Length: 245
Ligand SMILES: Nc1ncnc2c1ncn2[C@@H]1O[C@H](COP(=O)(O)OP(=O)(O)OP(=O)(O)O)[C@@H](O)[C@H]1O
Image 1 (cartoon, protein in one colour):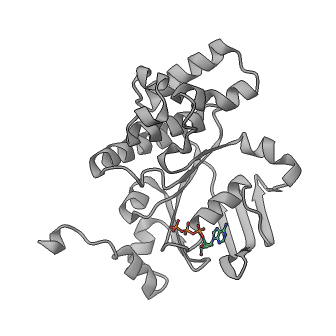
Image 2 (cartoon, rainbow, N blue to C red; image 1 turned 45 degrees about the vertical axis):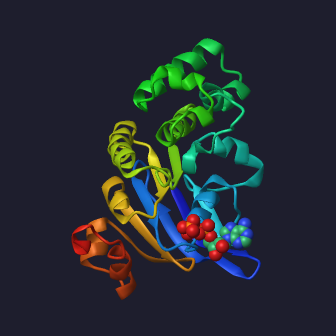
């Protein structure tokens, strides 16, 4: 669904992406993993058209992204950032309905879609009436998902969607997201710092380091056939409770 061909991006003297080639398959979940500053969020921002390559090309459905067609492109993408990225002065429902209202959806259609998505994302109906500050982190994240799914886009891009949550809620939301991705068959690209979360949710893992792709494959492939010592090092960098006892 997406192709990045020889994509490079610099911010001043910092190389964010260094000539990467990446194919994102339709209907699959891809997780971008790697150390801080590796370029993961930059890849997501390129897919949504918030960042633009200095060199190379981003293609969606075989067509190069064009600046003048970005509004149309963005309507095909649900983009969720940490804590949902909600406007604090709008209720959860108003946050979620913003784009649909701009597109002139009638009120009944918006209300029906919100009710349907609240069930799908397991959000209590009264939570939609509250402001973001009156919701828990997990609920804000669910509202972010509702907002991203509002127009039923074929693509979901998630930047550290569960990063700020406590382990119990995170565990619960991981399971619900996996269910949701399987049911909706969206093309999902997510950034996570958690290798186990990536392995649990994604069909394909893409390990980045210093703006380059070190290895792309299933969790099993990265685990059993690491392309270089760094892959093993990264996969095993998270301490398990057992080794601390
Ligand atoms: N707007 C910007 N201005 C300057 N440098 C930037 C900007 N955006 C990103 N960078 C730099 O580009 C590199 C890649 O950043 P990016 O946010 O893609 O990394 P990341 O892998 O998502 O990191 P993290 O896991 O810490 O979020 C980093 O060195 C970062 O400091």
